[in-house]
Image 1 (cartoon, rainbow, N blue to C red):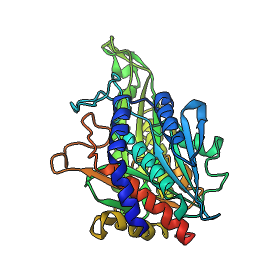
Image 2 (cartoon, helix red, strand yellow):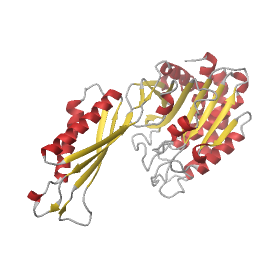
Image 3 (cartoon, one colour):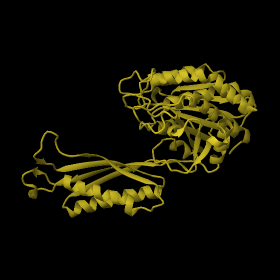
Length: 402
């Protein structure tokens, strides 16, 4: 019965949510600079009856709404959306494409924001039907801005009232629109980065025998790093290692062997022990190769947390999503996703799940990926995911758990 009301409300708000999302798409803002976006969210939330709004968080760019069910006290569900954009020049040609030069919603966060607002509007209309509380967290700075850490650790969004379950979702271009996938375990993996500074002895390019060429050493290290994935880690671990930058010497001089060469890259895995092993292997390879060539290698590395779904939350999300999209379109995803997501700040402290909302149409399937300049989101997904989020909330509150 409540599901039909949720679907009906989602349909009623579809046009409003589409226009809200298009407005955000026209005016994207980079991480921790989302002032206009936060203002629009705040204004929209304050128009919702019964919504308690906390704005101006983390320097004025974070917003939280709190809705209390009128059937009495109960659990608290937290629903989260990230709101920032990327430093990308849009090439979609959409009539509502970005008006901010070099900035674009190329990861679907405009859609995330709109469907969370939709859930807030739907659940406000159904306050008489549920107990407990729903928190709507509009988080800035997911794209490397530390927004999740700041909202959780500095603004304490998991407290007052304490969140008993947390949910988030991502627009996913590899999944057909209308489908919702739930990762069986790893929503997003452990994201890591490393830097290797190779220190040799520079000199004139005409006399390489008098030098220790750090570029040549870095080249050998690069080859050795590729062996870590293929030969040194267990085959059962999902992992990725990519060297993404190599810098050495002045760009305007072609006859100088430089003193040093710096390499940086990314490492990803779905296992923390595997991450620690990768870092140890990077250090061993870099320092061993450097020493064999009379050079030195200084290695630094760090990594963040993974988004690991609570086991009980996986079937819960499948069952709840199926009420909205149909059983055939609510699927468990066994593939580990090795991208990074700071929703780990939430799932490491509270039970919950991260789900993937398909956004691909027959015309766009396979044409682009996340962070692409031609990223396009199927707009029908926005009210649909507003309904899915609403169903997550009411089902959890009604059951008092997973």
